[in-house]
Length: 294
Ligand code: ATP
Image (cartoon, rainbow, N blue to C red):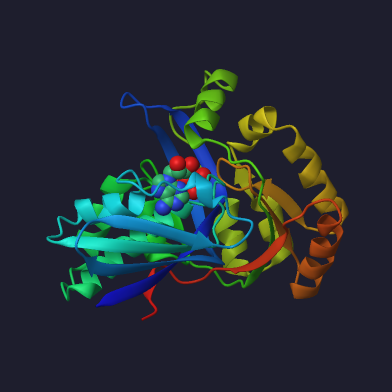
């Protein structure tokens, strides 16, 4: 018996970061969007716990642990499941790319385990388990477009009238999220306690107009990510010159995403950026949160 769940990558349309809290976490006010890049997670009963991983050629599969530190296995421990499981990951979400690939796998494993054993736990139970695993895991369950507060784990769906086209440029080498936050602290020691609110972004999402959304995109981690990886700044300029309405670093990076005005616009930007980058993808958003495939 096995169950397969699909979970999407996230980007942050708004990422307001406050000063580090006493517990070391940063207060966030963020707007997540799930986009059409997916990991598929199959959970099966097995004699011992194990993880196997395959995936797209551009995914750094060697960077995914296959021991108990894999967040998908940790998710099963959090779910307090009895018995042992094989967790098989088919990854299309870049590793350490600022797209919450591990969080997607954790959310998918929680849901797959729940359905495999016919537990049908209520959403609030799964969301609480998800929040204990990581700040982005609850959003991976919910999907769509949603605001995240606290350290990002308090998720509330928001109105989104658009069907947005994105060009996604993963990097060959990942960037550690804690490292980017540490650099944020160095660059902005006097960051406000309360993170910047999305404001205009919420109106832009409701309008469905790409030009308005482009103007309202905001990421407080972009400056530290570009300071650590100056080539990301050049990439963003290049994408915007190629016709993207706006390019931003996705979350803590190093993946960069480019908002385009249409499918055709995205294809043009993809063609231009493909001249200088081996891996350039397109995606649409918003898409659904973690859901059962089979
Ligand atoms: P976020 O956007 O949530 O900060 P990320 O997308 O930048 O995360 P992940 O792909 O989630 O980063 O991986 C971060 C690290 O977590 C990896 O470098 C890897 O060591 C570890 N890891 C544990 N489990 C997984 C998993 N299932 N998939 C990918 N990485 C995992």
